[in-house]
Image (cartoon, rainbow, N blue to C red; front, side, top):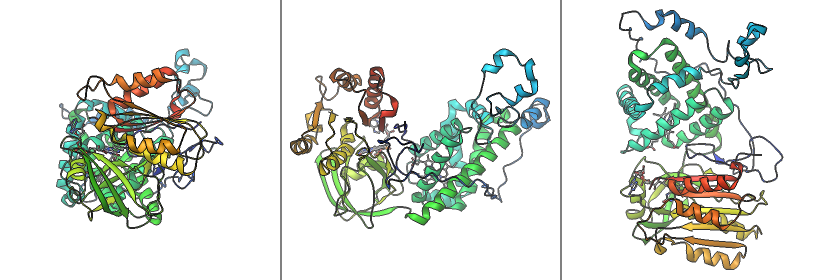
Length: 487
Ligand SMILES: Cc1cc2nc3c(=O)[nH]c(=O)nc-3n(C[C@H](O)[C@H](O)[C@H](O)COP(=O)(O)OP(=O)(O)OC[C@H]3O[C@@H](n4cnc5c(N)ncnc54)[C@H](O)[C@@H]3O)c2cc1C
Ligand code: HEM
């Protein structure tokens, strides 16, 4: 059965689908209904490091002996997971096969999953663990290095770098976490490579980024840096860049780097919430439940995710519901300073096809704030095709006013009789952000073990809802999540 879960880090293009190729009748597919998995071309001989800016030599240890002179280190450098220690096809590690019957009994139980990438994941993880408490500082140093080595790359980024830094660090942690697992790593990097087209990233940008990355990690490690770490990171970045660039090149054949879309309608329905409609200049195919990263000319080059609030329409218009997050960069510009005529850039659609016609399961939607937007899109489509499945929507807001979509839900409910909407506001008023409220209500309301579940909204609501659903025994495979962030 397909994993129907979703991490909000940059992922696959199109709705996530059953990539196992299984015959499950309700598997999710991508937006085009295809299930193709393109293998990355990792044979590209190009090195993705800046030719003119070599990574400087390894610093000497305190005693003046280069790190490589240590016998232990030299041994480590030669012993790579995936080589000597890789399990043989029958599940025994290579070391055990050599040791034969003399292997210690407990070691035979210690079967590691096979390394399917050939990267030195152990060294990558070990080095990252050494700087885990100051990863943000690594991010700061990385960008400082990058903008020194390649000042022209600064133009690709917007003004606020804090969110970007945390995304980069998050991506590094994910990459290193799955460095031994090709089936996880390659699709993730392919998605990231395709996504980078909309930022204006081209092949030539990869070399200085590799140099800056290795320099920043090396500087953070200081004299804990070893030759093995150096070769592990250089090789890993070469492969990462080759996969990202390969996916971007293939994507360039079939779709634009971004879509221009004109704002044709903008209305602030609450002080902090606006509804807007945009008209993409060219066809923008997507599925209800999906979202796009977009940027506005009022905050150039800063991209944020927003869910489509309408099902695909004949007139091509897309609707978005945006709530300001404090003085957040993009949301405040979209709510307070956007007008008809503004041209937004939209990235390719991402996320889940929540209204997939291939599912016969009833649907449970748990939403908070603008998390209702993708659910409205889903309901519109289910209504249009008179789908017939039962849908429960739990809809939380800080107060009754913030349940702005209730009239719309009520009118859909008149036509789609299988819809049940449960509005949720705290009895203690808008300042009560008790995260347990939604989770408790959902679990008290019924048994959801046979439902498909879609959760969208603020992090705390998402986390407690997931906790309760798991306590109830709803399998992870039946749950998809769009975590909108902390607020
Ligand atoms: C898949 C997905 C779909 C999304 N869909 C929608 C949608 O349809 N509609 C929508 O409105 N949003 C949606 N979001 C959230 C959206 O992407 C942005 O994160 C949000 O608009 C904030 O962006 P910003 O640039 O305004 O804020 P940023 O400048 O990024 O600042 C936000 C950061 O500051 C913190 N912060 C700022 N102000 C406050 C505050 N007052 N209280 C607490 N923390 C604060 C936040 O924790 C966050 O880290 C979605 C997010 C995801 C991941
Ligand atoms: C190891 C290679 C790389 C990794 C892991 C990486 C990671 C990321 C991640 C996770 C994001 C956030 C995107 C999202 O959430 O969809 C991002 C955005 C971005 N990346 Fe990269 N990236 C890499 C290479 C590059 C290169 C070579 C460039 C070109 C200089 C680049 C420029 C950008 C820009 C401009 C953004 C958007 C910033 C913003 O929204 O403010 N990245 N990157």
